[in-house]
Image 1 (cartoon, rainbow, N blue to C red):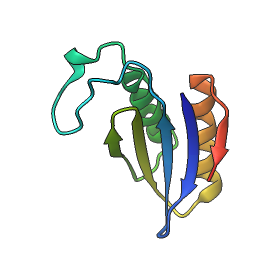
Image 2 (image 1 turned 45 degrees about the vertical axis):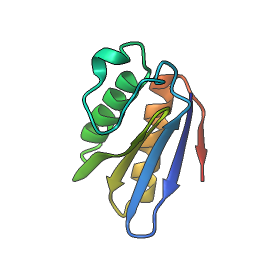
Image 3 (image 1 turned 30 degrees about the vertical axis):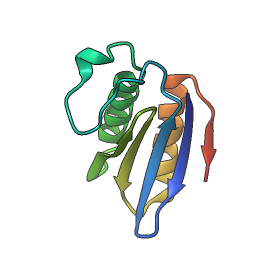
Image 4 (image 1 turned 120 degrees about the vertical axis):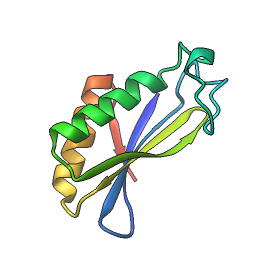
Length: 100
């Protein structure tokens, strides 16, 4: 797994997690939890959601899904707060955060 943080053009930021193991059967347009129980996706999504809520962002949502990748958008103009949240996510997942 790899995690990165990216500033977007209009007051928001993305946390990307790529190379999710066990995600080969993931299909973004349907509920496929039972087909990829071993995917790292479920833990990653839970951690990002929890940390976004703990940071009290107005909007944190799972914007991008494809096999092997999950991307969460954080709506804020506070780069430092968003970056701190991304670092907490990386720490909980045992990963090193990279910035795009």
